[in-house]
Length: 240
Image (cartoon, rainbow, N blue to C red; front, top):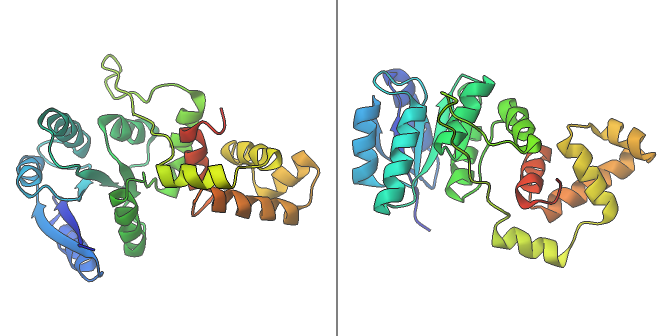
């Protein structure tokens, strides 16, 4: 299996150098290029066609959201390789998060998270799974839950994020091991943000029983945690 090729677009030299060194130390990851601004970054993406581009929002000439919008539009028009965009930022405001996904970002990663989490995010993004930082997951879930399009700013130019259904392998798992009615009830409450104790209270069952059901749900949805399960449930239409 070939390495995941990565381009770093980050204007702070020390941050970019640190990220490059950390990522290069992980087996299976290969940083094939780096840029300090959006103009260089767009040219680099066109020439190197990496698997994943790690893009900082706060670029000097064009912010990372606008870069993402330009690149995704150009990518779609020219049939370029399917480069995934992972936004790198310290901004967790609702407007910024939703604007990033509306622009076509595939994943959203908060800078203060560990480098191990970043490698996990890159691998998930490369595999075609949106990696949403837990710090901003509730923002995305709330918007998806409302059924409203995620709009960019300014609001007079609405863009919507394409919500994909479960990938074939997940669908096959669910066909083989479908969720029970009780599991669907619990999944609905997970999406609503309920804790295990709150679910137990609402359904008049023990916390231990809830934990067992949650574990089964995660297994059937091939999810690593409750947030990922909730996102997949919403995307696939398992809950409305």
